[in-house]
Image 1: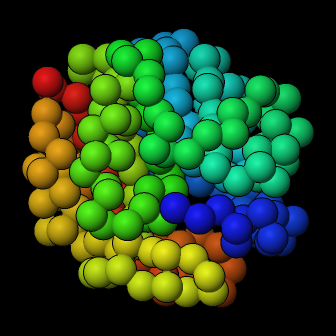
Image 2: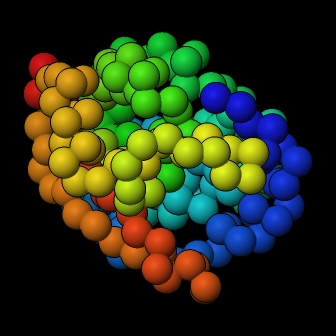
Length: 194
């Protein structure tokens, strides 16, 4: 997964995403976590969600593959943010929840099962995981970025392929950013069961 787009466009991406209100999207994830639980923000981008979880009293670990976004997320949150790629994830049963909002969508489809198994291993038994993909099907390249788009059946098939995950909720939502209201998202909340 290349992070060049985010390194080259960090200032604009931060401005476009850091203050978008996604509290509604975080609500079901937070409701499934134990109070003060350990949360991994995987591919944290601007740090917006890591900051929100921290302010809610969770113990937050955040990482991003873009060095420029790591710097901005750390400055926004006041938290140490790790410069890490998905392929480097090696935690074992370290988190009660993983938040992967609009981040795994940049992983090629053929690599997603292995990347997701590594993330699943980072969850405790019974831990929950929120992830989202752009609504669609197949891979596409746009503005120097790879997107793996999934509709609801394809998202469920991916969860089944990864294994040891139970789907708690799956839904379609639409972007809350101005002028992006027609862009759909496939959102999943899953639980580690194995």
